[in-house]
Length: 286
Image (cartoon, rainbow, N blue to C red):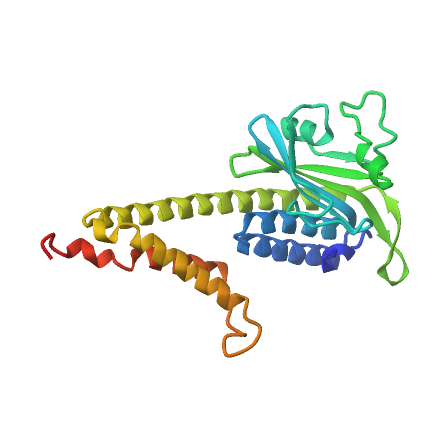
């Protein structure tokens, strides 16, 4: 579902309108910075940009070496899945070349604002692949394709917004219009925030993996002092997580309302691995 920001109006700038835009951008920035799950963050980026620009559909690509990973696809008209986790859309990678619209933006860093992808000028540096439209019956028209640049100005991904909608009576979209220059400016601002948020989540994931490896290494080193307890800490962590997930599945009884968040599960995992860390101070003879 397109967020409430989908009705940022397209009237001439006014102090009130500009103030609301700033409020919307601040809200989006706070939301992006607060999400720590990468796939949820990517889906949120597309949803927020669709809302900001009244776009019917959107997708997101991440640069991976000389390939683009197509990870998120959203389409209100087709009521498709919100990410690449299942359903009709499946995540995939494609070569990073200028042949595709997303590849061109990723390689050049230049945004593209196309009024009708079926009517590109002869000198256009890109061409539109009609395969998706032919397969689904969808009609792509206006398209805004934006680079996501991190704090080093490096393009780490591309957001593609499709079919800007003009809200009709009762705020119901009634037809497709080109993306405005204001749409482009606002979306670029959010895309920059999004790139930084993605890098922050990646760094956090890397630190989490490093910490997890250190915990496991420490527990394993302690257990090697005695063959009788080898593997014990790992088994405690595994059983603790299984018990927690069993509690999460409960729908009746005293545990029906108890739930373990991802953070709590991680704490439980680490606690299981380190519950015998005190052995490090125990003499070999004991």
